[in-house]
Amino acid sequence: MTVTVRFAPSPTGYLHIGNARTALFNWLYAVQNKGRFILRLDDTDQERSKDEFAEAIKADLAWLGIAPHQVEKQSARVNRYDEVAADLKARGLLYPCYESPDELERRRNRRRARGLPPIYDRSALDLDDDARAALEAEGRTAHWRFLLPNFDDDPKTMRRTDIAWRDLCRGDQTVDLSSLSDPVLIRADGTYLYTLPSVVDDTDMAVSHVIRGDDHVTNTAVQIVLAQAMGATPPGFGHHNLLTTASGEGLSKRSGSLSLGSLREAGFEPGAVASLASLIGTSHAVEPRKTLAELAADFDMATVSRSPAKFSEQDLDHLNTRLVHNLGFSDVEERLSAAGIDGGEAFWLAVHDNLAKVGDAADWWPIVDGAITPQIDDADRDDIAAAADLLPAEPWDETTWGAWTGEVKAATGRKGRALFMPLRKALTGMEHGPELKKMLPLIGREKAVTRLRGEAA
Image (cartoon, rainbow, N blue to C red; front, top):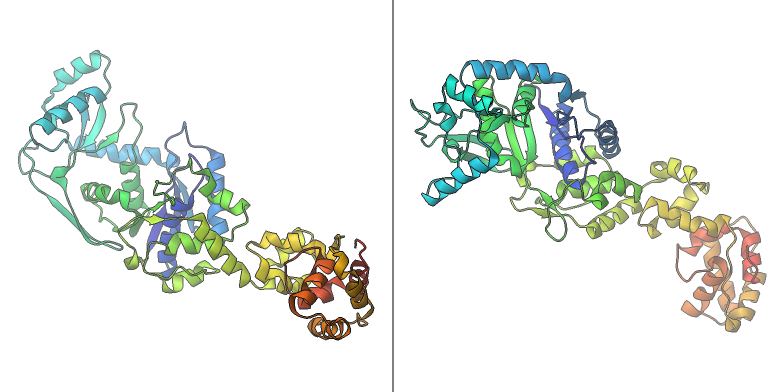
């Protein structure tokens, strides 16, 4: 069996970090099993679905390193859903219902008052053709429910019917169908809810494993029996815990600051985002992985906790910083060039340990290639001038700083912070920054002399 997974977002907004978690779990599982990943756009809500969101979803996945083997749109498959729905109707497994939302709520309340589960009572099954015609004459339009197989002979007499599966994340799971209402599969306006198109597509596209958030656990029992009603073998399932904000709130497409696009624009590395989104809330150590192949090497969905995992931008900052410090020049060369930084590998090696994001390198580039204003205190001026006279001839390398400051120390009697801080402020205009043994050769003798003499350069 070829492992085939799918990620099925609705293109009604931008992907957020919680959506990324689901996409990544699917991709990592496919990579581990040499399988296939389908991007399936759930765009049946034509009013809210937008092409711009669909393109943004593809771009976000590509940024993370996910390259779908197949892309599908549910809006192109409505005829297939109609075909399956017609078959289910003909077999009495989809039946029309006419209750309004208010009527359904009153019935649920009456059942609660009687100590019964507030599920649909299947009263629509009692309607004959004349009764349905009368309701339609009143202007009512039917919505269609799937008849769950939780009875023997009389659908109105439900019995406990356990549906069980071995979950990739949660282990053995069981849902009792008698605790559920017959699900609405078709709305009164004729459009499909999530369930039927999803099961039809999973069947037709030979999806072997459905991996998604644990808010879908109960839906799984319905999808299993619906697949069986269609004559199909249900896929395997895995339900991971959900991400919440640091304050414990659920994520949504309105969480703009946590959208993948906003994180990308903020300069975070895709490896840092993928590592945190995948590993938080598992027993794995949350370590930065540069590529998804590295993540897949030891990722195990069985290690996922059942408790929600809190996503913190502070944690992402920390992880991103660690990742940036380990990036090689080849990883960032194109981005540095695009930012107008042409200091090559020497500059990258000089500054990368001082960066939280690759883009921060632009803050240090002016020290090498720009005009900075030296900061020289009056008490240091004479010794800084003496230091300028002691600068050796070029070429310079990383040993130049140590040799030069040794001579300055001998000439001025300064040492430690009293020696190094005035030199740093004069050469860079700042009190902190990358190691000067690496920066000095990049600054060069001409700029260094000019700055040590108190002139902008």
